[in-house]
Image (cartoon, rainbow, N blue to C red; front, side, top):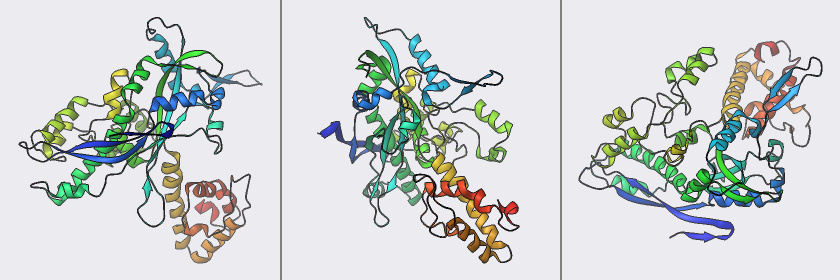
Length: 427
């Protein structure tokens, strides 16, 4: 039984079905408690009633810059409400038939989701998986300010409890690898089950017909929520896209196979990615689930994989496709580049580690690395926390956050400048 908390918070259980590997036995229902969330429509209503809604941009536009010398115009891409995606969504909205007897202006509430599971302590198992919501109607300069209050906490995804292993281990004819595959399957089912609850009938009705809200200028408008972006790291992206983690086609946006990753950055690679965008096949997924739940096939069995076909699909129904797909929503297009995980904590961290190892490999490597750390410590702080002082040895990279690797990236040229004769070789 769900309970309503202050500020429209709701607590409910998420039920998932565990296949029994037997066509004679029905699937076992497993309940995961502790899913706390706020209904999305309630969050939208409170955001438009907030004083910050005075800065909302309700109508998209193209921003142009004119060269003062030759008067040539150039398109500027700087905000979500100046993007082609929002302009296309606004055009599609205006082409839809109006609600019966309604002559109100129709505008879009641009939703930008972000989630990231995190540990809450250095020791122990305390962790949280929050889901945040930003509104693209607000400028990124106001939205990214830590004190703006523009980030709306929507809910906390529950994790799969350890007690599910007791249920899986008691299944007949189950192996150790089978338990691992089933546990992964249950984790996907849990995540999509949470989104099935978030994308409730009220939100689908608002997505299709809009909700009438009084905007800060005092005018009643019909507001239509549209999901434009979902920011997450790669392990969460594969959950959202319902694909295998690092499968044969690991990209959550296209079908480019892992074997062609060596062409990354070439024109051929970009052409292949645009030409092979992901398209979800709900019929194949339902057929694979029928083999699992009704005929006793294993989750990762050959029959299930042959039914799903290529594309690294998994036998879990995508909640975004199931609920919003009939309305023309593309669940793969919203998965944007995660700069923090993919660049700062990904590519740049690996590259910087490699550069430090090259220094150690040179003659007198220990003294060269010590000199590098000394030069980082000499860099003064800049701005109000824009670049902080490097107090510790940078080469050791002890407990560095994403902002620390961003600072290293910003000052690397200053540090390497006039760094004896190895600067041009390393940096």
